[in-house]
Image 1: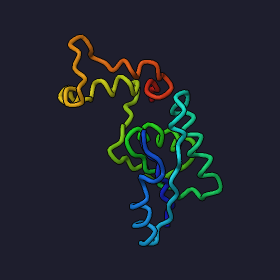
Image 2: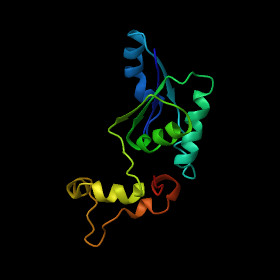
Image 3: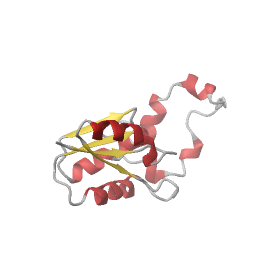
Image 4: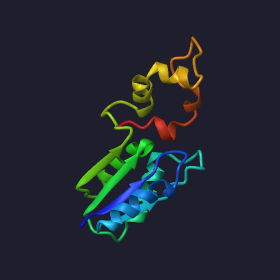
Length: 141
C-alpha cells in the first residue's frame, strides 16, 4: 500500500489530519502528517518542501502527497524532487506554470469574499499584508 504524506495549510498543524489519519489507518493505509514551521515568517515554500522531504527520507517511492490549502504550493516542489505517483490537492492552491502564486491568488480571489471578511478598501486590488512574504507567495512554477 502507499504511504500518504499529509501536509497541512497555514494556521494548522498535524492535528488537522487526526480524523483522516485514523480513518485511513483503520482501512490499512499508512500515513505520516508533516508539521510545518508555520510560526516562522521567514520560512517559505522551498524550506517547507525541505521539511516534507526530510520526513519522507527512508520511505519507498510509493508516496502520495496530500496538501491542504497553501500546501498545494509545497507538494509539487517535493514531487519534483522525488518520484511520487500522485499529488492530492485538498482545497489547495494549484500552481499555474509561469505565474507567481501571489498573482494567481489575486486573480482567483472572489471580491465578495474580501468584503465578507471586512477587507474592502476601494483603492486596493491586492493584499498588502502578503507583499512582505516573497518566500511564501511569490514563487513561480
